Image (cartoon, rainbow over all chains, first blue to last red):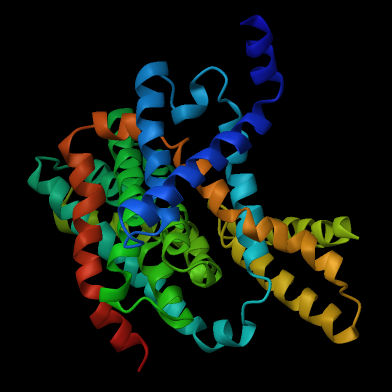
Length: 254
Length: 118
């Protein structure tokens, strides 16, 4: 046992390669044999990842899903934002710069539209749940943008930690939801061209959700969605603690 | 050589991240504004430029292609490291905050796409 333990700890990243390969293989089999290709294998694999993350967090009591379980710490490196962004950038090779230039302004509009949409629909709901102070309302609203905008905004305007925890959780739920439902809903919302993917990325904002969702829909669309959604966290961090906060203060008083 | 492709990708990545961090700093916020976006633009411009000059051998391209193909496995690993358990234990407000507006926006997307593409 000690030999295995040592093997898994020293070679954590390699173990993660193997486990992800097995998950992918199982998901592809499920997709093709059980579901007759109705749900893409990548979507099932990502869902498996999320389920593993749930139990990983439950068993270990940690905050990083399955990577807190002994022997699977390599997931933290393989799934880190560093490698994710590195791979996203690589997908840009071969995509059309012309297409992006042509629809750049659509991306910009959808970004601002997306932030305001999520922010204010969430401020309304937080109000319905009994929150009355502008700081808590703004922080929860910001959490509906992405799980980074929530805590950045909360810290900037001095929200308490339980409200910040809610805003992070809201952002994670959003990313999970977008991850799972992009592929099944793609046909219905017309998400099948670079232009739509750019608008979609800007509106939804969550880079992890958008890029994972598009990967499961059509890998060719990933760079276009990533291009706009990578600006969403920045735009959210810019608008939420400033203009949005002032508007909430103006509407709800202190 | 494969490493040239990986090196070019790394150079574009770092330069783009630097631009994103600088932009965030300039705007006075603690966030990277569009770092990945800048990196992608740099990679597209530089690979196109090398291709035009005829000095982007297939092996160099392989170095970039490998990482773009590793994208989905990396996303699977990323999903497995999200704090899903904590999200579920935050209760109903967080769940609704995350999901309801997303459903609402999904319903609006066909209309928005039509509006935006005019």
